View 1 (cartoon, rainbow, N blue to C red):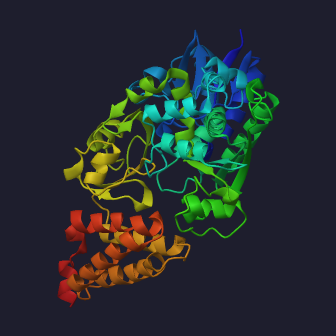
View 2 (cartoon, helix red, strand yellow; view 1 turned 60 degrees about the horizontal axis):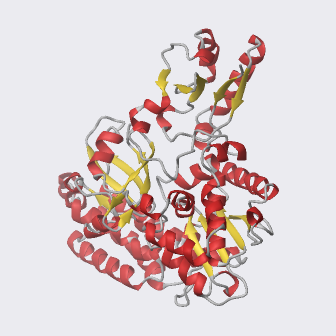
Amino acid sequence: MTVRIYIPRDAAALSLGAEKVARAIAKEISVRGIDAKIVRNGSRGMFWLEPLVEVEVSGKRIGYGPVKAKDVPLLFDAGLVNGGSHELCLGEVESLPFLKEQTRLTFARCGITDPLSLEDYEAHGGLAGLRRAVAMAPADVVKEVTDSGLRGRGGAGFPTGIKWKTVLDAAGDRKYIVCNADEGDSGTFADRMIIEGDPFVLIEGMAISGLATGATKGFVYTRSEYPHAIATMREAVEIARRAAILGPSVLGSGRAFDIEVRTGAGAYVCGEETSLLNSLEGKRGVVRAKPPLPAHKGLFDCPTVINNVISLASVPIILDKGAAFYRDFGMGRSRGTIPIQIAGNVKHRGLYEAAFGLSLGDIVDRIGGGTATGRPVKAVQVGGPLGAYFPRALFDTPFDYESFAAKDGLIGHAGIVVFDDTADMLKQARFAMEFCAIESCGKCTPCRIGSTRGVETLDKIAKNIEPQKQLELVTDLCNTMKFGSLCALGGFTPYPVMSAINHFPDDFRPSPIAEAAE
């Protein structure tokens, strides 16, 4: 019987040597004459164990990791193909606490299937949602998504069903679905993991969205820094076309929907929906004034749904299992599951999908395992470079949209970056302003000028030049940026700056050495 050996093709695993491991395993299989097949799967999301090699034994997947190419001969000597004992053996992968305690709905297949095997995808529940959607009226599909409580997972948290209904009701000869895969936030990798590890779920979600709103064309807009994701997505689209999942008659429905993959040049501001639309149209990526909303006049002035990868990839499970099933997970107005991306100075870096409601402290201390350095956690930034810094005093905050907003924070794309007690929060605040200044599209004054003045003002605080006066000026700048910027880049930059000032005031006071020097 052919043994299946799984080695990730995910970019994170590749960066840690997965390709060398795959070559070494292929060599051992050949030299030893073993009846085995290598399957290049996506990552399970446990990056501290990558490259993670799995072997299917008696219907169970036994894991070994992190594996280096030099470990491979000894692994085979120890009976790798039979799940043999070795110091790198982790046991049954599904039983590892990090995986076992998750609620994987959107990421149910990631790390399990061959990303480019449609047969694998269907064997693990794929296409069930699309087949149901094909048999439903568009308005009923929209209602199912609305009733599920799904909100945009890209950061804004806007109800997905309402956006779809607006496009469905809008008049237009042509409508579009645009998938925002321009994942630029620090500490985020969920979009890339889906595209590299389970691209058909995104294709299925986009096709359902097209059928629901009357759109016939979809675009996946991703960034040039994701070459593996781009290649995987393009190949998956071709496979889907050949299987009539995409094309002039989706699953024989007589309704058309097709997808094109487009690559951006890496501008952070193109993650903002109207800048993204300009880029897709071949224009400079600058923010558009709203109204009109993209749902009324979006791509090429046509009604357009713009959703994040995770939002669209969550749709198939909703159509398959029903709105009530999905809505039962979560709390308050935050329904379903959220893929939490744990990064920074933390032991267990990776992706953890769970229902909304875990406390921030639980995520950092129990799931993340605390800092990798072993030093105390000082701050956690949630929501990318524009997210607020939370101190340990706020670790009881439940992970949901409203609870974070109540503490002047953002969930954003659900990226968490952990810092230990050596972090200088004045430098972090300066970085936020500098990041905004570099990435600003330049269209509005509060963002373009405010961020530049912010850097200058924070530098004066670092030099102990009238620090109290500078703090007042930074606060005023942040207020202007928050309420005067055209988009979230300038509007959200005050979150990391003001949270650093408010929660870590000691880092903004002159040190005794600096005062003595004066």
